[in-house]
Length: 266
Image (cartoon, helix red, strand yellow):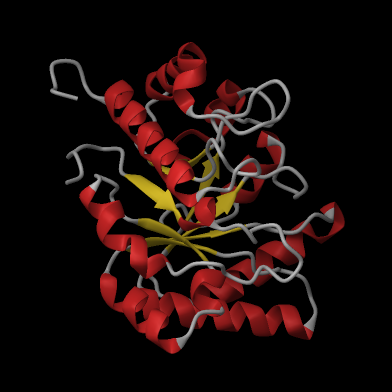
């Protein structure tokens, strides 16, 4: 069972998905078949890659919607001006209504001249989504929010009760301290992935001192948010679901140990 505390840790369904970066991105497995194991191993729920439900058969859709395990909806909707973009945003809002996650992850676009328009479309889309679902902006390279200054400016113009930010503390674009300094309490979630010097995904324990350093920095800045094991050892390499899942479980265990409060039993 999950360990009580202020830092829920979720399993990202994208970690086991071979087609995550394929052109068609067709799912290769059913997330429902892993739910019992994920929960019994101590994860606090699932961050669901959108195509694991968008492109799933109705039987799988029913299982996921009825599970209560999907805590975050990982969406890649575009905030462009096209009709197809608008239609996909409406579809995403419908999935959020069906799943009732606590949050949805989104990426805004890459054109700096469209920043104000992205914000307006984001607000319009938020009005169509459940008010109980927070919208987390992924501060990701290749978007207008890849720099902390731009992300802070965007968030200052959005309701703090509805909109927040997520970062990549172990694969950070820029200094993590700068992100935490400028965004402060608006940073509520972290995607966990770690890479070696050659860019290969590795489990957290292979660079334990660095991981501890980053976590200590987050805690010293008052971070009280959650984590998702997004990618880990085996992704892009063996793509063996069992091996990847075991690595993700190890990453979760290390996070729980390092994030435990002094005097707790870890």
